[in-house]
Length: 293
Image 1: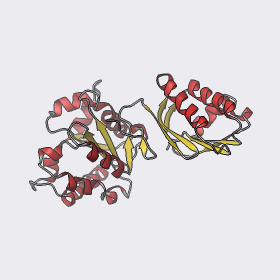
Image 2: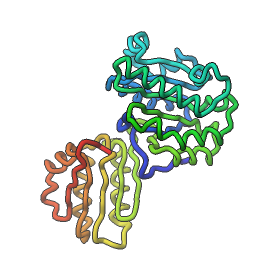
Image 3: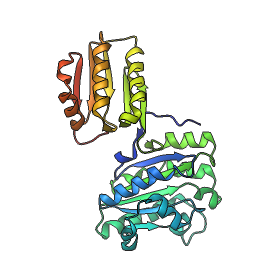
Image 4: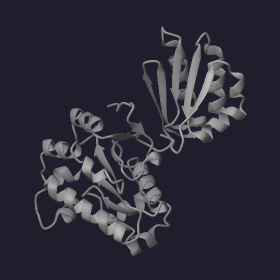
């Protein structure tokens, strides 16, 4: 099963408070990478983190998988990092209700703020659905009607789905239903082609150079109307000099495009200028201030 990349796809590094994200996995070893990075970034930003892992995985195992290099024991001891479960969260209720869950998450967020943290991040492995015998339709309703939890930008959440446990239809509905969908692994590069444009997300470096080249080539060759092309690099979390230079090379070869707009962060705009973007007549840099998104 291939999970699409589209306009709502981001790398986990770009998540912040206020984001509600879909994640997915089909490998017991690889599933921890995105979640571990999400937790580590949250703690580095003075946010509290709670983890509701797969009920079939012990807390000790989940901790060692999320933090394979250690260094987070003190966070767990201080309460900045806490392992719990959906059963514990909704206690004393024994069956799940969206109202109870959302109320408890609001309480946890307020508690985190009262303790001096910037906000709360939660990791929720959706294996709890089967553990509590919950119907998928009820969960889907919660996932698509939870906007109020995130409105004040004090709370962030990843809901991660095992593609072996849920039908392809459910996984796709959940991907589309979340405001944000994450790349499966840290270090990946995603490319989304749209009318008159191409949007990259993730890391553009030596390991993803071939994919970067191919996506650019397809974008430049794929449009009948050659008046304008938009290359959106704002969701790129890392841009190497090699990939930046390759993009400029392809823009030069792509004429007769009258205009190629490159939308990117100020940092990446600086890289492109140092590589000579000003000498590429068709290219215009459009800086997106304050965000890589």
